[in-house]
Image 1 (cartoon, one colour):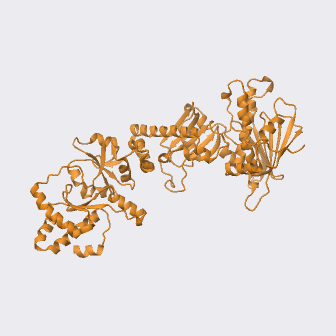
Image 2 (tube, rainbow, N blue to C red):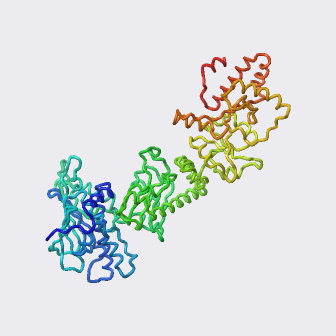
Image 3 (cartoon, rainbow, N blue to C red):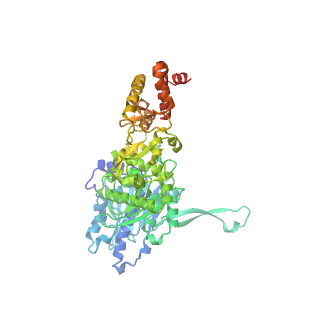
Length: 623
């Protein structure tokens, strides 16, 4: 029979489709199996009303056969099959959707038919691995069978053949191996088995293949030197019923946990399991896990966030980043929806409105679960927060604070008065009536913050202080700005909102000393003030303006040439003996008084964890 040309597309379009939509050659088997399942779905639906068919759901299967000698891979189904028109319209037109047309043509409740694939683009992915494709098929209700053959975009032939059973047989003749590619791998049973487990494990019909196995010969079973023999056994390679499709009441938590460990190669037990099923504008099922431990590569570039995305049990992508926001990147799980086509590229996924709706719903679901855990099981939440609290803080800071209101109530900080982690809401509820700010202090550890002289006054007045020991903590609070109309204030700020009890006489006496120290230090400090916060320490540094010392240290560590520098305000404890001594020396030995000022400034730098500008000068001066 004469060769037909493809109706709608050219060789260029076929090449474009193969190379752009499918980035991995292995995807071809998923597509063909999905089409086979689709064909069985159609016949299965007809069988519900046609007693003459004589088939039940248990009779439907998909068979796979690999022949290394002929280098062919055959996929056979006993589904509805195709006639000549179907072959011309479905396989003769790239991207034509026979499944969609079937759905449209059914008169009774077409929405009840769950069709997986779309015959067309997916079928042609087989040309990534096959140099020639043969399709032998016979349609239900037809007396004639046909053979469709093609070697690519140059066209196809259709001939009548003898075929006793209905259904479709697809024979792929593998491409010749090259130095870069070995197509023989797709004829290895372990490779086929792995691909089915990866992509098609939850196809609703058995995927059967004759598997070569080894066993001890019966007559040598009790021998010291047993002999082995090879045999072939038909084996169903897919599990068929995904755990997320089963009713929640029929699945134990142990089964969910075991699935989590096996599916995601995780060693920990999830702190929460979220099972959800939604029907409506967007229909999907989701099985999500909140881990209890941080994966070893979590804060590296190698870590891949995202959920596994399925279309009616067929894997579309292993890491769909669009389904989880960055601040919940720790969530693992699966989403299965029939509202997405299998024939969808990464670029299409990013703009799919169904996917966007699912992602928004899942984000709310995860937040609600975390909020409920925080309220009902603080121990579990503390465990989770220890592993992923930093991620939530990064979420507050990222995207210019876009998500701060959604995340602020999930944050925990160590409290100076409670000696444990507290929420911002708990802090505000305990605030004193005259307290203006939510106070926080930053340091490498709780012990280091305890030793900060800047916190002395706050402690003496009984104010609660939040400890910031993560590098992202201060940025988090700066991004939040305020919580329940209460602004955040660092203990190192020059103004803590506490009234100054300094008298006019004290002010006049102090002004001369402060002016002297400022003139001595020059541009090293922006200002010298009489401290309102020091009790037992002689001196401290506070930051003026929007940049804190912790920000200065952080930016200079990641980008040494940034030139980031906070404005330094030197605070003096006017009642401390060292300051009084310096004051008395102004009249008797001004050079020594200047050395006192330099030493006190250097001590303030050390207390703040800032580098000395000239360490040797400091040691010479201090001695």
